[in-house]
Figure 1 (cartoon, rainbow, N blue to C red):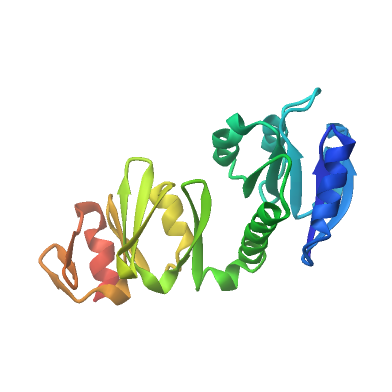
Figure 2 (figure 1 turned 45 degrees about the vertical axis):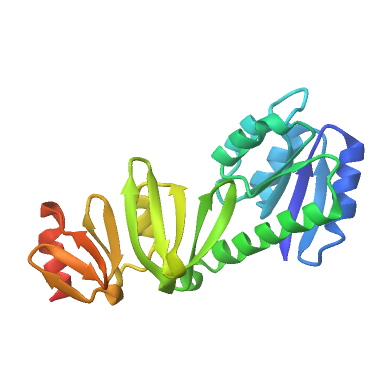
Amino acid sequence: MITAIALDDEPLALKAIEKLCKTVDFISLEKTFTEPGEAMKHLRKFQPHLLFLDIKMPSVSGLNFCKAVQQNTMVIFTTAFSEYAADSYELNAIDYLLKPISAERFKQAAEKANDFYKYIWNKHHEREINIYLRSNYSLVKIPVADILYIEGISDYVKVFSKNQKMTMSRISMKAMLEKLPGNDFIRVHRSFIIPFHNITSVRNKTIFLTDIEIPIGNTYEEEFFKRYA
């Protein structure tokens, strides 16, 4: 069960969140707040899993409030203003709901939170099966077994999967590698991470993944051949 609280300066908006939470059986809305200070005290003391957070409040911006929340607390923004959507996703929000919130749209956001909750709280098991990346304002689930290779471009990575699917996400190569099971993935170039199980052959300093050629960088050559031998 996902434990949740809600912060909004409008009591009617909080009533709406209460009603919507009752439409799903995996979220328990424990308390609602109109005062940011009281909400923060509760967050620090009880550490609920999920926070429904208004953005435009008189005493504090919801965006600034979010920055002070512990990283393992999921946040779903609830607001009447669409212009803050991009900023909210920069803060890794689970979703961004525009008021008035429909039951269907709320259910979509709740299911995203439920998926991410399962990932976070079962990380050691789940990371062997799937990884989750932010892409196009969505949380994308990628089966690890489907990954063909990963290419880094500036501050982004492209994850190429089976069936010619590609997911782009803003994340460093170092952080990307940390998400993957280390026994099967290795960085072989400043721009490439590959899974060992997809290697069909190695010739000189080139790795062949069937019809895909991946260069081996000088910095990564020794480690690769030590593990591949």
